[in-house]
Length: 386
View 1 (tube, one colour):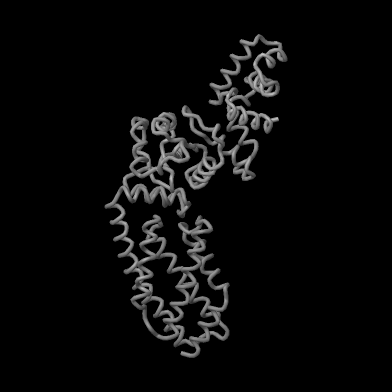
View 2 (cartoon, rainbow, N blue to C red):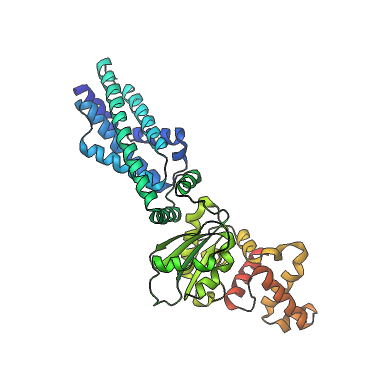
């Protein structure tokens, strides 16, 4: 037993062992390859605890305690909630056990044959026990989540906007188990009371936003509440009905539609930050803030989430195309002079011609150059473009 304890202490004192286990799991189990930093921190903590417990069982020639079993069951339940496949979780433990036995064999000096056989027997027995216990807990949690489908869908969106997922494949599988398909392309809408003293948005109020969005294709949007805000994941086709739905309920919002499915957490952060930082005159009952507004606000706040060129494309849209340079020229001159009459005079146009071009610019960009906030975003975008 002394030799086993010596090896145990040697491995626990070496941080390289846990790092090697985590690296092997990420390399050999695809569901772990794309984990974000927050989830990797959890994996490292579990790996360190499991290594300590398994080596203790070997050193003391003992078995898993009820407390150990409860913790493994809790881990399995958490994996069911975040959608990581159970087979991937169990595969990760088998990989970890293999690395652990390799590290024990590489200890200096290595343990003798009887201790090595004892390690292999302990690993096999423990893996068999935890596989059964974790599979049972995983299945029970999955069934509970599916039974409470509305809650499960809210948890799915909560995990999406928090970035708590291993891969898009895992999310798609999790949604499919709930009879849903994630919208692609999508629109992520974050809404809040337009009045700073307005009531906090409840789940019921958030669900009330769905009625005007019916008939726009796809499944019913996913809905959850974060603090005082409602969050909806909509099919992109439903985006056009959003301003009316919000305005009728005294809400304002930000709708992000330019991010990919694996960046829903980024889309949420963009929208939430935009609502935090947008001046009052940026909001209008007939429109919501969009990707372009959110990116401009991030740029002004020193937190650019994309390139200046992309911000320019988001705001100016078709105006950057060669065939519409006359419109970009009209916009630039209007912004420089401050009035349609002065801009027309500089360009040698009739004022009505200049006003027509401004209306056309509004149609193409969905931004009115006469509106203070939208004029600012257009001015920033054309400055970047030049």
